[in-house]
Each structure stands twice: as C-alpha cells, then as structure tokens.
Length: 212
Image 1 (cartoon, one colour):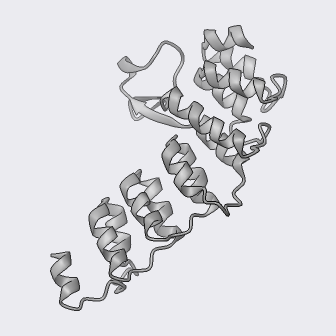
Image 2 (image 1 turned 180 degrees about the vertical axis):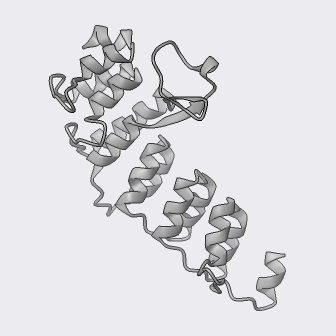
C-alpha cells in the first residue's frame, strides 16, 4: 500500500492532526521496511525519530534511520548504550563524533532486561510488574564498556545510581567490575552512603564481593 501511495504522488512529509508524520508512525510501529521506503521517498528523519525508535527498542528502525543519514544526538547515544548493543554503538559513533562517553558508560552498566523471577540468577533482584530486572548479557555489556574505555570514558562519571563500578557491582557483573578496576575506578568512592562493596553485599553478589 505504501509503495502504491508514494507512486501515486502521496507526500512522505504530510502530518496528521497530532503533527505525526508517516515516519513517526513507522518508528512507533517498528515498520523498518516502510521507514526505509519513506526515507528514500524524501521523508526527513531526525534525532526525535531515532530516539523514539531506541526508546521502543526498535533496533531495525534505528539502523534504517542511521542508514538514511540521520545524525544521532548524545541522548540517543546514551539510550543505545542502555540497550547494550555494541554494533549499534559503533554505528552511532561516526568519525567526527563528539559524544561524551562517560554518561554512556553509566548507561550501559545500568542496562537491564525483564525476566520471570524463576529465571533470574541467585541474588537480590528488583521486581517490576511481577518481573525481575536482571542485567543484559554480560558479554555484551563488557564489549560496550571496552568501546567506551577506548574513547576515554571517565570511569568516575556519576549517574542517578552511582558510578559505573557501583552499577556493575549492584548487577553482579564480575568481569565488568574487574575491567573497571583495571581502568582506574575507585572502589572506595561513596555515593548515597554506599560503596561498590556495600552494594555487592546488599544485593548478594558473592563473586563481586570477593573481587572487591
């Protein structure tokens, strides 16, 4: 239908009563193929659509927007980091990028996914709507951490929950904790009355406790 409409002269940039364009709607629906066709037809994508695609975890749409020439923002870069998608981070970081890697390092060490409580590893996990919030796969997080460190991320950048080391300790990411310590993270840093070690003990991350 979209191909026929565009072929009949329909404008790719028209907006509805709410100001939403076909590109906006394709992003929300996760219709990457339609989105790519709209871009080829002259629709103008921007940072808002890219951020929406990332927030909705529509990775194919995000890639289509990047392929269509959309320039990512710092916020989009951090959102991609929160998904712990190394390939996507590489695609966002162009040769002239000036993103701050520290906030993205915070975001990737906070990265979580929802699973049924019975599928969660041993330990103390936050539960939301009956689901346990556990880390994204550690291998992916570690690869993203390496990517940030290669771009001189400040390991002492503080987010809403503390430093990257504190986040990794809280999440039980032993390999990430080791790598951050190697990169100079301060294990004695206090945030909100806690250190990385106290958080590891609180959340029952025995392997991390042994490291710290």
